Length: 403
Ligand SMILES: [Zn+2]
Image (cartoon, rainbow, N blue to C red; front, side, top):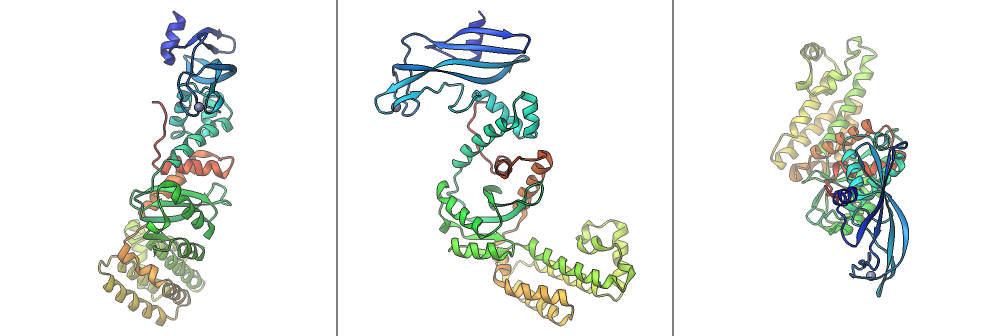
């Protein structure tokens, strides 16, 4: 009766059968011993040739989902078949995969939890060391990522992120249409672009099909794209351009603050977008703007530059930026002049925005999910695990697991 019940629960069928079921009430463990009918025949695990005779057996154990509060283990004298083509092969049972000490259902349970809680916590919950849990997660993520197709990808965004302690960088490449991560790799140099170009053929894609790439103005990314993506136009994303202008603005404020105490503790008022200010901050900003200050002037220049990004027509935007640049050159404010020079040096990529319309919105979406992973993780043990979580959370993977 007990054997029939467990056979049904585990979905096992001829020629496999349950030999013995043992409850260890002290340890809280349930051990299910499987066997197979004498003369039973099995398929080859390599070529799927059916009905092969058994050569010998090897004892194997899999951790399964708990039955009630019992940690459950399946043991089996696992047959090795002799195949005319492949020779001797260990049979892989329907409940497990080779090289894993866990059943597929147990792994599916772990993968479901991995999206919700830190791996260390899953380890505690199921009573396994977290390196074993990481091994399960990384196996299924790698398998699903290897099957991800990039056949239709044409527009890419690329950005760097750092692991929790901030020393190790990871560069993330995303499909700007689907908003899904395609590839993530260690480092933030031009080698990451090369690695991405080499990865694409593994996903039914070629570097030549990439037409638009959004990056920040890092020289490493610029040269990497030039070298490895011959058909791609570079767009310097608007977020990074405005960020550089904000940096110039802040530099001016810090210099001016030395002579003008009114500017003390006003940093965020100048850097935030006006619509995000509180009523009190808005009032303070209005007062400050009526003072004859360089900071207020540069602030006005920033708002004007942001307005240019709202222009639809590329030619009109081109005219507006040129006008803005001559304004900057005449400003006699050093940080602004430097920003203007930088714009000139990256002119094509900045103007490309008005044609490609690539914005980092989707990239920022991915980034905020990566921040969330970092907050949750309390450490990854290594950077490969960090990359695994980036894929699991942001690559839209289709995991092949029983439900
Ligand atoms: Zn075979």
